Each structure stands twice: as C-alpha cells, then as structure tokens.
Amino acid sequence: MNITIDKILQINDSIYAIINQISLSLLILLIGFIIGKLVGKFILLILNNSNIKKIKIFSIKFDAEKTIPTSISYLIYIASLIFALSYSGILKVVIYVFMIIFSLVVIVSAFYSIKQVIPNLIASISLTRNPNFKKRKKIKIEGIIGEISDITYSEVKITTEAGEEIHIPCKLFLEKEYVLLK
Image (cartoon, helix red, strand yellow):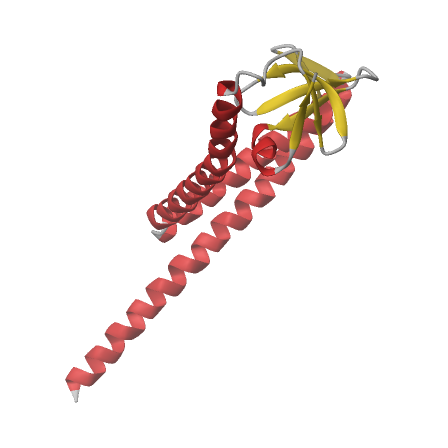
C-alpha cells in the first residue's frame, strides 16, 4: 500500500512541477508583453515631446514616432518570449523547429527558382546558337512585331515599331511559333 501512495505522490509532484513551470512561463510572457507595451508608449511620449518626426540612417528616412517605439516593443516581446521558452525548457526544440521550417522554405524556394531559371537558360543557349537569331533582327511572336534589342540568359527584349520595349522569356520562344522577318 505504501508503494502506490508513494507513486501517486511522485506523480502528483511531477504534475505540480509541470503546471508550475508552464504557469511561470506564461507569467513571464505576460509581464514581458506588458513591459514592452509600456516602454513603447513611454518612448513615443518622449519622441512626441522632443518633436523628433523623421530620422535618416544610411540614406533611409523613416518616421521616428512609429518605427522606434514599435521596434523596441517588439524587441522586448521577442526577448520575453525567448526567456519564457528558456524557462519552460523548450527553447531548443522551438529553435530546431524554426530552423527546419526555414531550411525547408529555402530549399523549396531554391527548387522553384531552378525550375524557372533552367528552362530559360537552355532556351537562351538554343537561341544564341541560331545564327539568324541576333540583335537588330525583325521578329514576330504572338502577334508582336518588333526588333530584337537584347538577348540575355532569361529574356529577349523586343522593341516594337511604336517604341515600346517588351521583355519575353526565352523559354517562350521554344514553346511558341516565331518568325524572323527580313
């Protein structure tokens, strides 16, 4: 009978410790958000009294009354979130999850970019190897008539008779019919 009571007390202590840790983490988060909001309002009050409206840093102008208080508030929010996660013991897990998500986004973006770049690059090589396809040649594609003004690895620039410059992806020349005019 003593063994079961000891186990129940041990489980009770474990549950109490977990609830205590979670509640203190939430309290840290709440206090951090309150401090962040108060500091942001206080800085806004200081900026309003000092009549600082715009600030220029590295040739970039921005509204000091909106940007500075908001930035400092967000920094305090993030710091309190990191401190709360650290206190609860799940900071490393959250960092790993964000690193995995970020890596997946980068990989998917890279594949998407490659999917867009490679067909254009192959088409560009194909077009530049054609001795008749060169600058200052008249061309007709998709009802557009103009003169080839530039050929890059991703696009062909055509200047129409009206003077408009149209950018056409190189891969379109492999997919659609075009006619080189004299």
